[in-house]
Image (cartoon, rainbow, N blue to C red; front, side, top):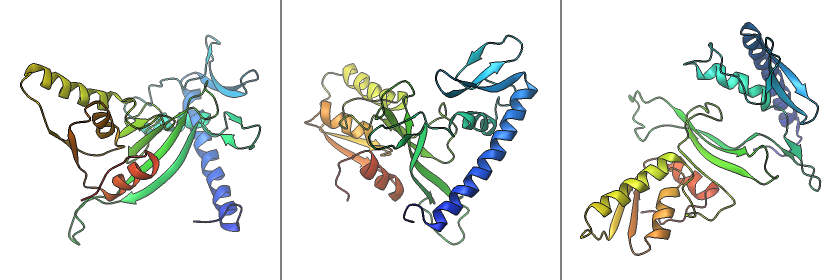
Length: 242
């Protein structure tokens, strides 16, 4: 890691700006091909997308024919709204970015044999700002592989301002818990003493189980050390490793 404002950090920032400029140019070209242009809303001080035929504008990126089935194009267009802070904290002067990367690591699957064909993947923790919310309002997500935009699938999500176990913020987690509840309701004689969860992800499901079923022991099987580390460091997952 590099301290802030070192020569390496400045050089990296310059390179990132050049890449973003090229991405923005390509995205603007895709939009123009389908009758859209990017403008600047003076009231919100944010980029907006304008339909050249109707003159109607919107803050959300439009769904282009080119981006159907191609998430990369969708992310390129959304990037036009991500390169400018939403606002700045008046006390700390820290910018509030639409998306902030807290951790990004490249990791392999458990098989590390020399002849393995396993493809390296990545694991990321990001904070997605609530655009109309306060400075500290955000959703924290765990992403395996490439981030596919704000509407893309994630491994897990939670509100970092809430105590773990307070709520299930993703449909996937809510579905897992609902399936368990329905299974228990189908047979009132079943009184489980232990529950096995396959996959830790952000730790939301185990935390929710422990809060609402305190008498039930929760065991979790997770094969990725990177996931375990991310859950503990960024999602406040509390567990004992064995």
